[in-house]
Length: 55
Image 1 (cartoon, rainbow, N blue to C red):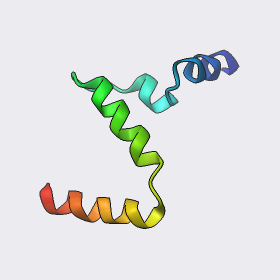
Image 2: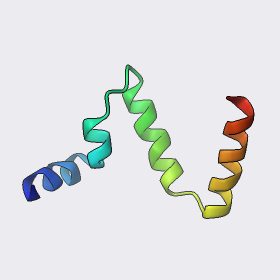
Image 3: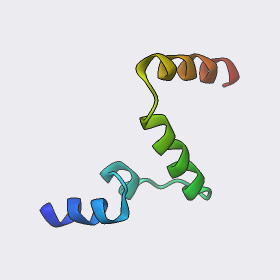
């Protein structure tokens, strides 16, 4: 299991991303998720509200 986490670290991905089955645009999704993880809690809340509006 340790080796698995080392592989994820090497590729700078999370275990969730490793097992994701996203169709196309994988790089775009990874880029967006990296930015989302860096948001402050208040900005993340605003993003969630906006996503609820556009869904």
